[in-house]
Image 1: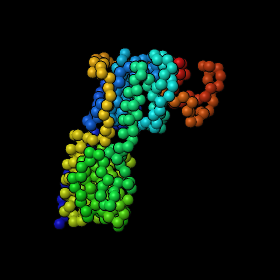
Image 2: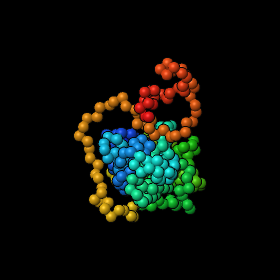
Image 3: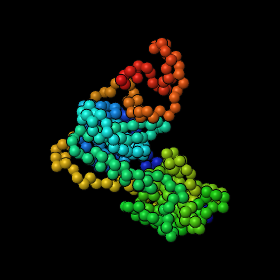
Image 4: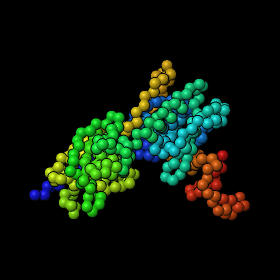
Amino acid sequence: AAMPPPAQEDHFFEEVWQDREIKFDQQSAALKLRKGEFQIDSINSVEDTKGNNGERGILIVTNLRLIWTSAKSARTNLSIGFNCISSINIRQVTSKMRGHSQALFAMTRFNSTRFEFIFTSLVKNSPRLFTTVLAVYKSYETTKLYRDLKLRGAIIRDKELVMLPHEQVYEKIGGIWNLSSDQGNLGTFIITNVRTVWFAVLAENFNVSIPYMQMKCINVRNSKFGQALVIETTPSSGGYILGFRADPVEHLEEVYTQISNLWKVFSSTPIFGVDYTVEEKQEDAKDAFVPRTEDDVQIVDSDDVEPCLLYQPDGEKEIDREPVFCAELGLAMERLKEGTTLQSLWAVV
């Protein structure tokens, strides 16, 4: 007899935007750390040299992003997800507060737009800005299997899972068919505390690693192969719909229950994989720490320049826009970007 399908489990996990987006001048709620996000370091006296040259602020490094907040106004802030960063370098820069000094350059891309961020430490002979950010970014880059869906990866060796740090295997279930092709492929499920992995028995490089972070919903439904377990992934991971059937079919309920339960546990205590501890801190770090406070004010939007325009990379325009006649200037000029006005360009200056 066919097994009655369990109820669909949907949206256990609040989708993570903190490492995948860049945000400017946000309300304090957007700067609060989400579940599974933790502060690694808080560095005082850091200048946002690109967008707020001459302004002192605090740079908070978490396992998912960089948060810079102006000391003068908490409403002036940045949230830069590590997934948006394409490179980090140390270069010479001219700061209003430090003069010629070394600064941290972060080249980023978000929503097909490139941004450049420059942070200068206003504390002399303090390498923490460079060492902490570079080390945490490296840790983020080398732990993507915790957070990203992976197809045909080097994740199985001799039919055993290549384990991640802090990963624990809870179940290994054979007789699981992947329904991605008409005939199906026989394989094995490995269910851990951070992901569900399937690999083919005959070709272990034919596999998929699905982090709980990227699961959108999981259910059991009828298919042309009979009862099937269906895992749907988030739009940011490609929006895959992955189908599996169990042989014998009774295993399907066991698989469904185990994955659902571990997804629930992960949702309440997420593990994002970034592991870094600051070894050396200033002796007076505890005294110097300035906690972030919420402004008890109503924000009124004005016609000021868009903050994102301040972070356009210098000399990195991909293509020249066509010239148009500007009546206000009485001469031809390059067509402005959408959303940009002549007045806003003067405001940047």
